[in-house]
Image (cartoon, rainbow, N blue to C red; front, side):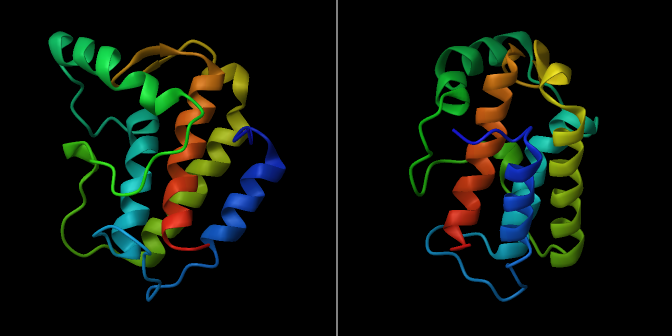
Length: 150
């Protein structure tokens, strides 16, 4: 599996992101390309920005029990998978802004490296290994870049 903490892997993702344009159309799903980029940014916002409310203890237990393994394992997401409410993007988004933001988040994650993420607390799932962080970041971005055929 590709390692999001590897510079070459990040460069490949960024090259694919740079192939998108404001008129790119998804092969499945309801989001336009700007919404998809904003949607991908939510995962990183939960790590770097304190703008999303944390789930209460009961919800966190439910997420850890029912959702965590599907998010952090190395199996790709199926098409048209249900999206958690905080990841639903409504309304128009600025394509360039969201694209640039995603690239900055990907680079920042790579530069911080695996050691920074080993045992790091997740917004919703508790402590994760760097492998679990890698799987979560990589497969989410991969899923949506494939959705937009880049």
